[in-house]
Figure (cartoon, rainbow, N blue to C red):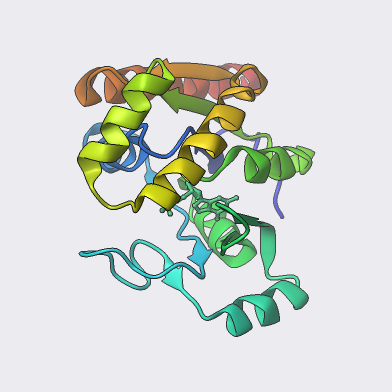
Length: 203
Ligand code: 5GP
């Protein structure tokens, strides 16, 4: 994997936060509005697609068997089984390498344990951002409003979220997603500052 700290090269940007924090919406709008060469790394998962999700766009939706084959081949930079030990999620090395080689600022929207794994790859020097809605009550309200969860999966996601909130101090930046445009502005601004710092450290 290439060293990413040189001026003009790609960067890895890790965005984590409890599910229901609005990460996907923020990332989508960030890509539309922020004038940096942003791209998202498409993860692999064994969970089933939700309505409107497309294979190869939102995730690579894989069978358990295929996921485990790739895992054994070392295709993942990191991978995790989460939410009550049910679904696997993983960052594909190829996705990251291709993004960085193309000079992209590659967004990894991954959970906290996956992020901790990626941080072990010191050469990637990722910018880490933790997004959350402010508190657990607000998170539960948003997850219920989304309406994609059963009571069982909602309870599992809330338990995971409480544990994830404990990791926020391990990230470089914390963003409270009160409104999407404000969160997007804040993230874009801090990424642009990082770009300026890259340029300064090069000159
Ligand atoms: P969802 O099922 O709502 O799309 O995602 C559930 C959680 O899995 C989210 O917190 C998301 O950030 C995380 N996730 C998505 N892709 C990956 C991945 O490749 N690796 C890890 N560790 N977590 C991921």
